[in-house]
Length: 391
Image: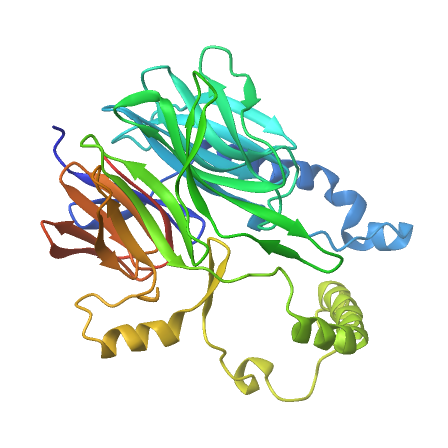
């Protein structure tokens, strides 16, 4: 049994580590190098798009770096000395191995691929391969198809093993049988205006035989993020199902009515950008400060296809007497399915989790909490933790 020491997690598009209660941001060399390359390319082209010369030639452009599309997407434990992470690099993906306990040691390149996105991954140490939830597209849409992809470390070749109009996510390896993968999946129904998701279910896929079996499914619930432990217990998060569309009819109508004003606002903003850049003055010289006059809206989190009212849930959880209240509604339950078929509720209000030997480490959207034999211990205040890993 390994001793629980550190927690690694992804929060607000950053990879972080919690070691003995101290949080630190981990430097991802794949992201750092890619960002450096973008800046160098921009600097070499600057004479064409910036300054008085560019204005004179009519080639001035308001270039903006899309750094929001560069961030870590998943992490997985490999062995006692190494873990693996994936990173979105705008229209492509990098997967690299990284030494545990050293932020400056050289990383190992496993995969670098354009027009390819990785959303979740796990590592099969027996067969030395990565199983990822991925799409062979250049964009990371929350409404697009995602399928399981196997990447062997020996060949660095990707092979999709699932298909169809669906989203296959959150793969994990059965610790008792390395050929078996558990993952969650939902169907996608495309209409003229939107996308509808079916209830999410947990599947069991044997990569050796190709046998596929649904092990958790209910029309009233979504089941996702399955993990099997060494005792044959299957963990997953269960939440009420609703037909979540990618569009809101009321919002769509409102967007159509306000579209001309938004276009005009964008044009004014574009002109104001150039005016400030080359004259030092702004076109906006009067009027109230929008940052002060605009009312603060309730914080919303988009988690696993669902929109969560963070502030509302926090107040309710606090009113219900939660010891460490979080942003996730109590209807999101971490469950444990025993080999006998019995289902136990481990914790309510769970956003993400990982198993740590006899412990369970969970995120409630606001904090990271360790649960040992039903007793809860606050590990850290960490918002919006989407992925967790312990070493």
